[in-house]
Length: 250
Ligand code: G
Ligand code: G
Ligand code: MN
Ligand code: NA
Image 1: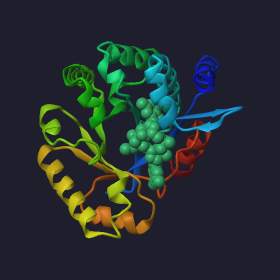
Image 2: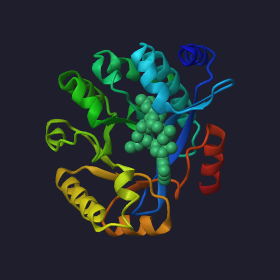
Image 3: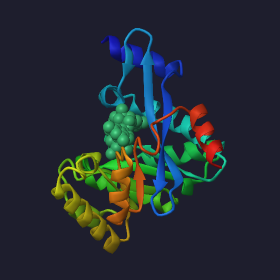
């Protein structure tokens, strides 16, 4: 198809870009890391969302080369940040089904020179479900190398709390569907409160995603949520704008 060919060309021509969104420690109001987000704007097709082209790349078998390009770029950008902030990178389902993923990712950051302890990988429950044994192996290999692993979009999908017991994660990211309704309905507030309390017991860090205003930030702090991310703190921005954002602060 047209989009598939265009994506292949864009990967080869190095036109798939990576943007960065700040992740903030809500206890100190400081930026502690950035999530890398793939961005692709094609000359003919215009802006194509990663929720379209990532699944396409998976289906056509070139997610590996796409992910490698993106991680390389993101890690290089992270090396030039003024502080040793962490870099959070999304892993796709196909990557979590491929036993070679852990060594591939580690070799990329080794080549670039990024300390594995500055890397964090975001995986979703849905991705873990596909092949739990392989995924578990990948996660434990990566964690053994010092990489942290977070469970993304928590609360959506086929949530299984057993997942939190069987897998070793470092962090849970509460899906923005709960955060966006926190001011409107009490149910979301109770759910967030329960997630925070459960994570305290499991010694997992909690990140609230999709914080869009001051009121939401205040509420999440009051609920004991340790970290946050969202337009209120910063929209995803390219490497140059991210450097500017950081130099304004540090
Ligand atoms: O940034 P945006 O909201 O458009 O992202 C849409 C979806 O695409 C999100 O679920 C996000 O996790 C995913 N996504 C963005 N960048 C990447 C990437 O580099 N790799 C993978 N696997 N998913 C990504
Ligand atoms: O699935 P994942 O959590 O990786 O998706 C991250 C996506 O969420 C990014 O593509 C980003 O563009 C989007 N996002 C980040 N912060 C906000 C926010 O405050 N509001 C909304 N609507 N989307 C956000
Ligand atoms: Mn994510
Ligand atoms: Na998410």
